[in-house]
Amino acid sequence: MTDEDLKSLGLAKIEKYLRRNGNSLANFNGMPLAEDLVMDKNINYLIIDEKCYNREEFKGEHEKLLATITHEQKLIYDEILHAVNNKHGGMFFVYGYGGTGKTFLWRDLGSALRSRGKIVLNVASSGIAALLLQGGRTSHSRFGIPIAVNEFSTCSIAGSHRADLIKEAGLIIWDEAPMMSKHCFETLHRTMRYTQM
Image 1 (cartoon, rainbow, N blue to C red):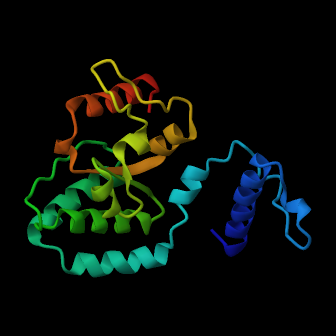
Image 2 (tube, helix red, strand yellow):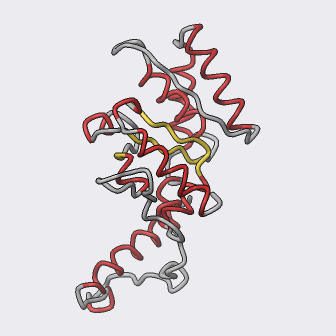
């Protein structure tokens, strides 16, 4: 995105918040106005935010991380990247004790894909773990998984911008997945099947 695009999106977000509170950028002398096209309610800001990274920065980070990756990490990295690049889908379970390089692997995969303009959604089972991931969120927050989840639950995202974001994602990294109830994964799977994601 160009600086002008970012400026327009920023103005649109400010205008949106001002309008919620009964105000507008037009009420402030000298302030530029948001373009009507950018104010379109159909624009998915979640997708725009996820694609708003500096690709060159991620390319540099990826090259630096890839140079220090272990042989075992490289095997996992290659398999996951192959699945993403060829749109094969799949689920990969990476297990290791603390300090074995799982977060390092997530960073390398994320920077590789983001440097190519792809969306990577980093989620974790807890807020603390989510803080360690680039753009990390809790799985409940990102996917709309109910707190009181059971075998019949679905995520509260159908037809939303959040659902569109998940559809656009090239890779979802779910850190500390074993800490979650199986119903959380089933809930997301059920929702994705019902909404044809």
